[in-house]
Image (cartoon, rainbow, N blue to C red; front, top):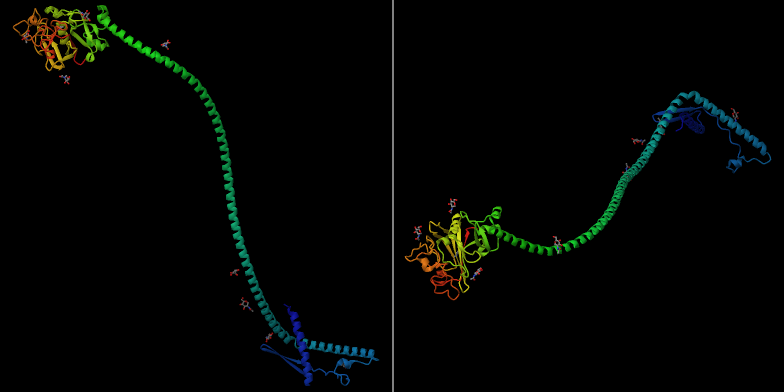
Length: 495
Ligand SMILES: *[C@@H]1O[C@H](CO)[C@@H](O)[C@H](O)[C@H]1NC(C)=O
Ligand SMILES: *[C@@H]1O[C@H](CO)[C@@H](O)[C@H](O)[C@H]1NC(C)=O
Ligand SMILES: *[C@@H]1O[C@H](CO)[C@@H](O)[C@H](O)[C@H]1NC(C)=O
Ligand SMILES: *[C@@H]1O[C@H](CO)[C@@H](O)[C@H](O)[C@H]1NC(C)=O
Ligand SMILES: *[C@@H]1O[C@H](CO)[C@@H](O)[C@H](O)[C@H]1NC(C)=O
Ligand SMILES: *[C@@H]1O[C@H](CO)[C@@H](O)[C@H](O)[C@H]1NC(C)=O
Ligand SMILES: *[C@@H]1O[C@H](CO)[C@@H](O)[C@H](O)[C@H]1NC(C)=O
Ligand SMILES: *[C@@H]1O[C@H](CO)[C@@H](O)[C@H](O)[C@H]1NC(C)=O
Ligand SMILES: CC(=O)N[C@H]1CO[C@H](CO)[C@@H](O)[C@@H]1O
């Protein structure tokens, strides 16, 4: 914006120009004075300009020429003089004009200074306002444009910033991801390396194990070799041992037999040996002691002063039987008196009678059963068994007491079960008016002579039938059949 004095000067010059123009017009109008009115807004200014002299008449013009140049064109001969004149004229006019101008200036300076100052002030103010308005408009526009541009720039900037932010954000995210991934990678690498080390350790361990296993295997193989050697040795010795074992069994059998012989010998031995060894009352005790071979053994029956030799059946029906009567080939005479039947007679290895006293003593001490075995000449064998057998004392005439008959020698028992007294040819204790012992021979538990007598006369084969005094067992072979072999034996019940 131009400065205030400059503006004032411009206004002044403008005014001067106007004034000159007005003067010209006033001259043309022929008025002495020139009055100029200037309206500005509400105010109006009246300029009264001084009367100026009319301008000198123009030099004579050539007819037909309207052009000043043509008019001013001098003749060529006095061109220099004209020129000088003309310069002088111009100088004078300039001078005059200068003078007038100076006058006008003075006038203005003197008369119109205050008004002019006011007008100037107004003008200046208007100008200033206008300029201000213009400037403010410009400024508005500028500011608007600036705002616009600024907004655009800001928009762009913000957008760019946003984009940058986004970019940076995404970059950050990417970086983070990258970091995470790199971390993961590191961890994985670490783990992988750890795994590798572990793997290596395992491999080395495995190799060591393998080596040790190989070593163990070799050791085992060596051991196996030695073991198989030992095994072969063992097999050899086993073979030898098995052969030895059969030998041993043989030896055992021999030992057993020798032991039984020893028992036998002991049973038969003299008193001092008996005292040192075992004392047996019957064959059941000897059997319990371990003897399994049938034969003659010595027993010590209680209340009997002398030991007795008996034949022990260690096999029949469980063994342990004490034979009290035996007939087999008629080698022994059974026609004996009371005393002989009381004490016994015959050969324990062959035919014999144990003796009524010994039988009484034995069957009085415990519960005995009686088994009677019979054989005819036709090779039939049969038996009669009594669950309970007991013989009374001599005072009771060796009376018979039997219960529980059982056997194959007939439906009925051929011995009267209870109360039959023993009779010999010299002791008639039967229930017959006759003497059964005379009639039937031997000694027996005759009733009214009865249906049996195993101590009768021994008849050889072919003479054994129709014999009343032979060896009879009625319910086996009838009343007159003499048997070939008989055995009477006793054993404690439950043995
Ligand atoms: C200011 O100037 C304008 C034109 O530029 C004119 O119309 C107006 O009358 C002036 N006002 C005064 C107070 O001079
Ligand atoms: C300048 O701008 C402001 C607001 O932007 C407005 O009020 C004012 O009238 C404007 N002035 C001119 C001279 O346009
Ligand atoms: C910025 O520019 C977008 C499009 O380029 C426009 O939609 C938005 O209105 C502008 N914002 C401003 C404040 O100018
Ligand atoms: C049987 O065993 C005895 C030792 O108990 C031994 O001396 C003998 O050689 C063996 N006999 C055999 C055939 O192996
Ligand atoms: C055996 O003898 C004793 C006395 O030494 C006697 O008391 C007992 O009754 C006798 N037993 C038999 C069955 O005779
Ligand atoms: C009867 O048998 C016994 C024992 O076997 C024998 O010692 C005896 O000589 C025999 N006697 C007869 C007459 O056959
Ligand atoms: C056996 O003899 C006794 C006497 O000792 C006698 O009382 C009894 O009646 C006799 N028994 C029989 C069956 O005759
Ligand atoms: C012999 O006695 C047994 C029981 O001890 C019995 O089962 C059986 O029937 C008896 N036999 C005879 C022939 O009586
Ligand atoms: C050329 C011209 O007009 N000169 C005039 C200047 O003014 C003086 C008097 O003031 C006149 O004498 C001149 O003629």
